[in-house]
Length: 181
Length: 337
Image (spheres, helix red, strand yellow):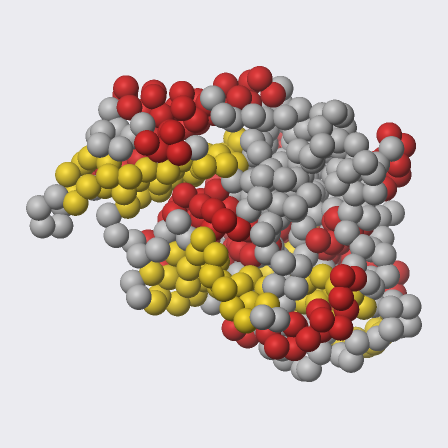
């Protein structure tokens, strides 16, 4: 880990280097800004959303060194030299991430405001557990609030994406697409 | 938008550096670990340090080692790491369980053991934005003179809302504190005050640098938590129960209780031990009658105030129910061994 940056006077800007979505980035900002604020306001990465800003809703979830955390409660200064991953880093080479595909296919996003956070929390889950069962998924996503979907579509989308990421030829069930007839 | 007030952020590498930084900053300086308690409070202007000193880069404050048969845990260990640590899971599963009941997985990836043990007390009239508090006039915990829960009260009734602290008190854990005057060791029970404002005996410049857990030796403990949602929420009632079994011949215990402690969270400004409840269990084999007597003894002094979630009379009734359930679980665990 690089040495911490020299403390700056409270109102002057401070500068750190970090890795955002696989790219080295240098960014200057007021030292009391949160990671959420720096991502949105200083790096123009507005995929990460503001919610309660008090750690009570999970809407601002990003991954820092692989770990899903609440960016509204992480000081950007504490992220010097670390790897930050946001929803903007998920699609690669013009192709959506399997989780994004599955969320779109199953209607796991309605208003979509909480979706970036769910995608990153689910991605971290699958990275550590490629074969999560429904309870694993519920536990891993229990810090993210969604006020539209009722969560079922989200759980199904994570299951579908996890199966595809394991190389299985998985398709959504007719029940999850159209309901039970 | 809720923004942090401006402050200077310092990242010391050693305890000595951190203490020197705090001495420089004086009363305007505060320590931070995971930040999940301090930063929301700063956004709502509950705490307004001009200098924030992070403890997370100090090497000696993490990890967990076995010593003299017991275990010493670094307070900067995140709650996620604490829950999954093999030693904690094997010998102190109640600590792992309580830590795993704190808030959400995302918050536990950031929040630390030390942060939960030093958690600011909470109240519906305090945990609000500056503008909300200004609109009804500030309370005595910050910026005002009155307690809105009990307006004639001379003291603040904000609630101890830690899940791990009642377990530490029940286990008889010890906290190692380091300050400008050196090191001191405080039993967990003496680390807390029953006062919503001065809820810790820790001095502001002292750093909690180790949590010592007792040797896993013939005792068992269980923690039960009441809240509205099974994720996110702080406890409106926490029940930590600890039982030392009487030693029998050889390695087996007799199945009788030598000593017991029952500690309640969420009903006072500190983790509240109820000695009468523990005494009601001594010498018994946790019979239904003994459990009922202990639950009744715990119910009587529990004094939830109307400043958290749920109806307060129902919360008081739940004390009896949750103590009974926790003790019944201890009995089940004993017979399953």
